[in-house]
Image (cartoon, rainbow, N blue to C red):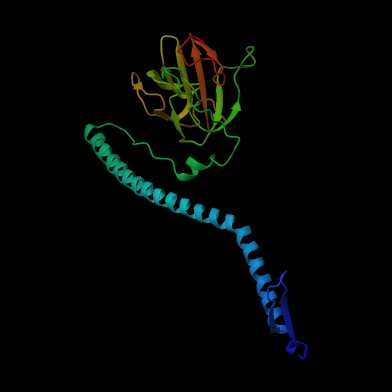
Length: 264
């Protein structure tokens, strides 16, 4: 303690004839000032080190709040759509009953069926390209796993399309605009739909649980035309998908059409 009571004199001796300046202070005051200076320097360093992270987190928080607000708006819209769909389902059921038609309004698949495959990076997905002619089939009609590839080497290895494993009730989308030329049950392909896209190109959708469009119905590219299933000669739920050009099958996974509507 005696050392802390000692005084320290700090002198500034300028060159020339200017007067010298001196400060006399206790030793503990000097130590306190040095400690405060060290704390200040460390604080400034820590501030600049973490400043970028703080700014990034603040920006991220603002973005999350905006996205959350947008999701709340979308949720409200979805709730309105669900209410409208429920009213439409009830209305169609009444009309069908009055008309004596045996018609069941298709159920919307539950969340587990709709989103079960989204987290798997190996699912079969081929986005539709931006073709000028939407009658050209492009992409795949469902999301799922390709369990059997296209193969027409000989009679023993003849599979004129691709099989895409997916849950029963998965919406099947038309890969191109066209007209339904066949909507019936086939002993091999089960509930089968065939769409004529132009004079030479057809697409086939087999093993469906139910068909949503009748014979002669025009359909748009991306329209829901069936719900996938396990009908016909099938060992597990999947969709059989074909592309035929002049009645000859081609591999749906090959990009055989260019964007200018030329022949394959």
